[in-house]
Length: 238
Image (cartoon, rainbow, N blue to C red; front, side, top):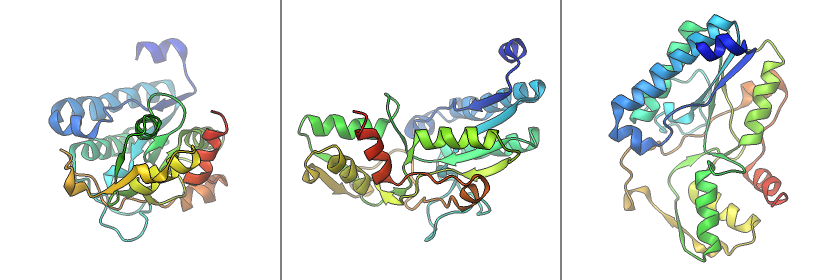
């Protein structure tokens, strides 16, 4: 509240959260305080300043049981604490800020240390290590540049509400890792397909969590990149 009252922002983009899914499962109370109550605090500050409020949510609000990409009107059903906290934050925002914009995204990658999956794959490949990657967890990797472009494009319009904002490729982690190897010129056979049951994660992950971006593309005339396009965009700058 102090910061917002001092700088009088026109736009607030809330990317803050406990993003580590297993950590949230081990620490459900902390996850709730940060991901739900913390979000409410920022939303209330945004409302007091009459600022546009953008909240970054997740595909993990769904259970991953759909055979087709999820649309915005599909009923959420999170299967782990992280997804539950993000869904509750979405609902709180909708009550507090009628003109807020919520963007559900997935597997953000780009330049910088927070592109965890991309950086882990590249680090392993550079060392000649095998890269075990799940072949049974599917979603839509998203170039962070595209997400930023969507935020500022939406901000320049009067469009608000809930949007799915993800890359145009619906792939599993094994396919994504092989694409990384291929485009960054490493041997693809270093990437090994594994099933999630063979290396269990503490928190459940949705198996098929691809999202449809049809509404976003229609409203702002902007297409996100495919995995191939996004990775080539990154590799050209390396």
